[in-house]
Length: 126
Image: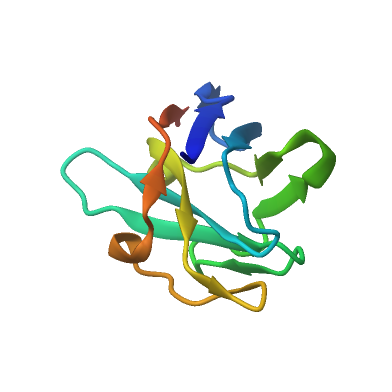
């Protein structure tokens, strides 16, 4: 059974940084796709970043150049480094396991992702 646990959220001022972690267990395949998503109050869940088992990444336009997704295979942990944070980045952040083929992510749609963590709250004040 796949389990994902996010941590690292908190409250920061605009321009600050946070690093989110996603500890993964139960992933039996060496090829996988992990998505980072967020959901603000009253908003739809949106994709933030994808990282596949080969370390390839893809970012939403709204975070490109500010967020960096990475992985530490030895620690079974994924990271989302968030710099130059803006108030509009305020949301609950989730990591999730998604479909992959030959190590590449197949989809960006939240409903394609099968296992989700509980989320970690990020609040950015102006």
